[in-house]
Each structure stands twice: as C-alpha cells, then as structure tokens.
Image 1: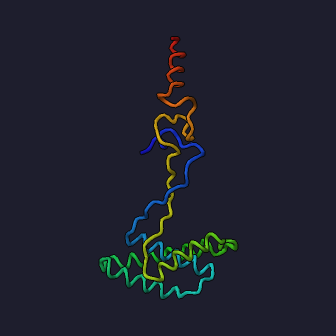
Image 2: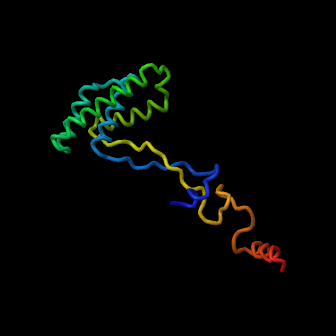
Image 3: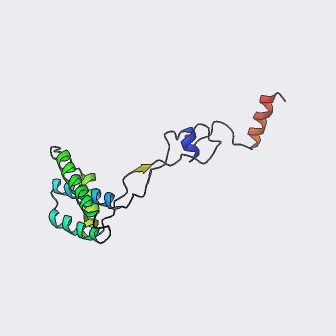
Amino acid sequence: MSTGSLFGSGGNSPPAAAVPPVNDATSRAFQVGSVSARAVKCGYNFDPAKLRSDFLAAEASTVAPTDLPRVEKVYDTAYSGVAKAIGSQGSYCSTEKTAEIKTSLTRHLAGDYSPAPTKKVAQPASGGWFDWDGAGESKGPSFGSSDWWEKQQDSVGG
C-alpha cells in the first residue's frame, strides 16, 4: 500500500506500470484463443487451426491429462466469444490494436504462450506523507525548512 492509495494520487501520476499476468493453463488458453480470434478479425496471415493444435500440444506436456479438456474448452470459448464480440465492429483493427495483436501473435507462433501484461496499476504521484494534496506538490513550505518553522511560530503566536 502506498500513500497515494491513502490520500489519492491527483492528476499528476506517472504512467501506470504493467502488472505481471497470472501464467496458468487457464490464462494461457484464454490469451492464445482470444489473440487468435483478434488476429483473424484483423486479417493476419496465419493458420489459426495450427496455432490451436500447437498450443494444445504444448499444454499437454504441462498439465494433467484430466485437465486438458478444460484447457481446450477455455481456448475454444475465448476464441468464439472474442470472435463473436468483435465480429461486427468495423473499426476494431486500429493501428494500436493491430500492433498489440502482432506482438502477441508473433510470440504465440514462436511457441511462447504466456499471457501478456494487460492490467495497469497507477503509481503514487509523490513520495510521502507530507504531500497532503496528493498531486506531487506541497501546499506550503517544505517540512523542516526555516520557512516552515517560522510558519509554526506564527501559528502558535510566538
């Protein structure tokens, strides 16, 4: 927990940092299935059936044989769900999205099926308890400075 989460981070927070994704069979199946559907939508030239079979073959060596049908079902559900959700979105394939898809698809075609970081966590805007407004700028003299001590004496009446 940070002070930014206690007092708010204001509007001057630095860019959010990527959170490492969970790398389990379910997350991998969802990632690869959804990336495959997105790549098909945006017209990438690859064989989605081969990607699926390569992925499932790789998973077969890492999960229990009884878990493989569940992994396959997650993959197929992710693929069909994403394909259905984006199928009617004519402007889906923006420059930003296609760059993201290309990066993930390239990894997956090379045999790296780990999920990409997707969630962002805002970083605190400043560095401490004395940043009362949470925007990275103090509202007055710095703690301990001569101006601060003078202000303290003025407020006490001395």
